[in-house]
Image (cartoon, rainbow, N blue to C red; front, top):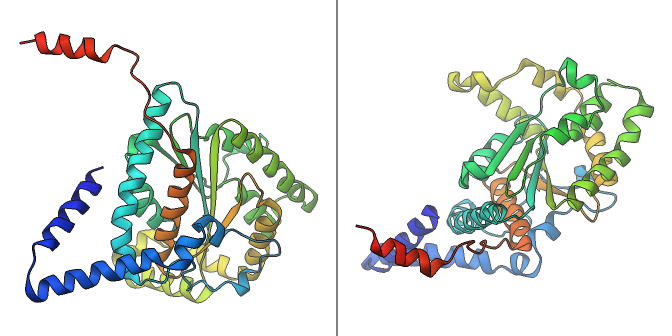
Length: 320
């Protein structure tokens, strides 16, 4: 909500400029507006543009492309301010709706190779809304206790409650990705999981949770550059894991595993979306729009007061 007010103030100030500063402000505003009016943005939803199609080939999807948006980074920054204001409002409505007995929630699943930008999405997309209405779960290697249960056991425990936006940083899909690539369980076991995942997600949707699944699609070259940056900068060393270099040796197998997950688990109730992630600003813009479209489709409502409003106004007026 605060971000929306700030954006409005900025627009008013720009209108009061004169001369060269005014022309520059008007030009920036026009460029951002043109990007928002682009046919690709207006004619098709972001969900349609980014949805994984049958037979998806990651090798044929350019990780540096910006489907659905013809603007540049500065245009995206202009658009983001408005999107975040709308996102904040809808998230607050969803949270408030649950206080009136609403059962609905949102689950945002983020998958991608290391350095694909999951952390940036957490900060710039999820971080734009009220934290009291968000639950983030980062799934690591399963613990000894978790391994004693079916693979979906720990996932069920982390599902968002009514009014919440749940975010999975990695997810149940690790059990058909890393598990498949490294043969951690027999093929017959992980191959059954695709159907189990589809049934699980259908159950989740049936209980009132809207599922938004995003694969951040980064190129091998871009990942190598980002890993190099982490090694070059002392303030990035904490992010570096030597195991990431080992995993690069399995790049082709990971792409094959991702394609199988996209092909087998992109369903009508829980479709997959492939977001080109070599440009961080675009990935954040795309995920913001996907989450925003999901909330707009839900159209959460403010709950009606369970008390007599006029009576309470009168009571308040009588207080000192």
